[in-house]
Amino acid sequence: ELKVEQNPLFLSMQEGKNYTIYCNYSTTSDRLYWYRQDPGKSLESLFVLLSNGAVKQEGRLMASLDTKARLSTLHITAAVHDLSATYFCAVDSQGGSEKLVFGKGTKLTVNP
Amino acid sequence: GAVVSQHPSRVICKSGTSVKIECRSLDFQATTMFWYRQFPKKSLMLMATSNEGSKATYEQGVEKDKFLINHASLTLSTLTVTSAHPEDSSFYICSAYPGPRTEAFFGQGTRLTVV
Image (tube, rainbow over all chains, first blue to last red; front, side, top):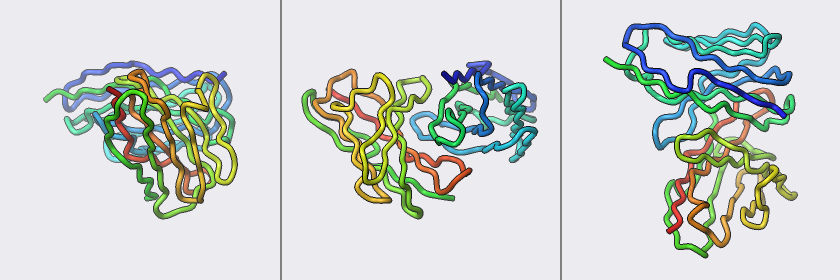
């Protein structure tokens, strides 16, 4: 059974600082996704990572995937308040089945 | 990007009644859609896979008679919560993929409150 672990679950940081969120998963998969969720809202797609070594960047967020280590990271650079949200990683549970297993989420609070 | 529309966004119903939630893919066809449930401040759990023209596939522990899924067309899946109880109160979200090796797009979610 695929398990997806995110850490930290809660992250409070100052504006301008950098930090990394980690996502580990237990079985082989080459499809990993990062989503953002604002309170009371649905999920917004941030990144889709489809191969080992994939790195994608959008603004102050950068995601990477190491399929050998079964690890993805979401790096935040020079955080701003608008990045405050909950971030989920999700892994395709059966290699192309499109059934996603989600991590527990990281609630990020960026303080002025 | 692709658009998945879910309706209603909020619904309050009485215990014992049934509630239908619609999920539409607006600009693409989806032979498969997915229904997730999210408890407050928790992660998303897959409930079932909705298959156009055939029966839904339910995840272990999900009552298929309580959560009826119908996928009658390539752009519409519905989730009906039957004989609702307060413990069915939750945030329900659907998703679909516009194509292979793309990301899933999620509907706006439906906040169900059973009183």
